[in-house]
Length: 482
Picture: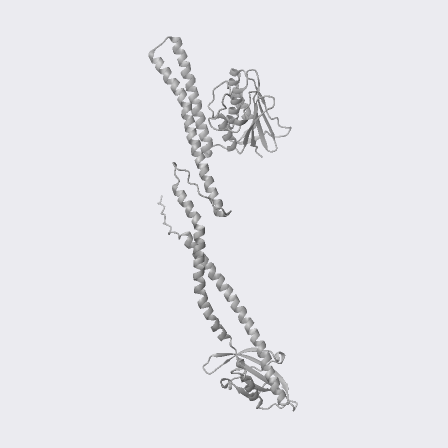
């Protein structure tokens, strides 16, 4: 089998530097987009304004000169119009053409560079409107011009076009805007980088504190809590979750230590009994005494076996979920087998075990659960054994199952003294036993913990309640196969 080659990953940039770089990228994109939009809009607005000014001012000068000529339109008219326009700074370099009605140029005056250039014939439909034209000049480059023309009648009855052409100054406007971009971008980048670096530092500082606290956590030190920021932010909620996680881990370690202590205590008693009995046997004795010692040893060995079996089962349920079988099992079969397994204990304690099964309606299939049959039987068996231990002789224990609305309800009721209110929330803890409960048999303290773990493993819930008349009732609700 070929060996898998792992390519080392490139070192990642610090979070603060990443945030700063991303902020700069966003700033440049926004800056260029808004500046470009602003420039285009301003350029379009300026162009429209210049066109309207040219249309008003140039045609105003032409109208005035034509009126002063009293309808005498001759070859000298373009010169007089050019001189009037030259008095205005915005019309420096203007070129004036006098055209016949058919568009032929009859006279021209103004910018000498344009004397031998041809211009498009004015469109009668756009009389008085500004048009954009490009004409080549001596060096071969194109000169961008703006043109406005209007038709005038002469006193002879002929009609003439007077056309005014001026250079377009859009290039000079772009040149004036260029320094704004060249100066604005470096200043904006520096300011954005400084602000992003400061903001990133404020954002990363709580995370760095969490990293410092995480490095201090170890199996012997689980008190690395973080002071939560006063503001209700994502970082504050992350810090709260961190503290809650440490609290759960610390609680788990405490529970684990208590569990080991309880296991040691439970094993200590039978081991001490076995050692004392072994010492007595070594010293010898009469047969009756030796037989009694043997019975005690057997009983203590059974107790240890039950404890070890319960510990293994609890470990399987809580930490080996992948080992649990998943198959369909009839609810009534689980109840019957659990009742059969506990029948001998019920007879020895003189406690009747009353079993009530679910009777399917006509045409209804047998209700089934999905899960591990052995674990389900153990769950019910533990509940029944617990009820038998606390029920007085002659009083019954009820084992009942009902099915409906997609779930099975398994109830075990005893006739014992009930559970004091202050202990009812803790009876499912491992090795927890109610003080002074007066059980007829000593238990391992793991039966109810196993029952709860099995119920939760099968997506069910388990609950207990004291009854008004006498005793208490345990109920397990499990989902049925649909």
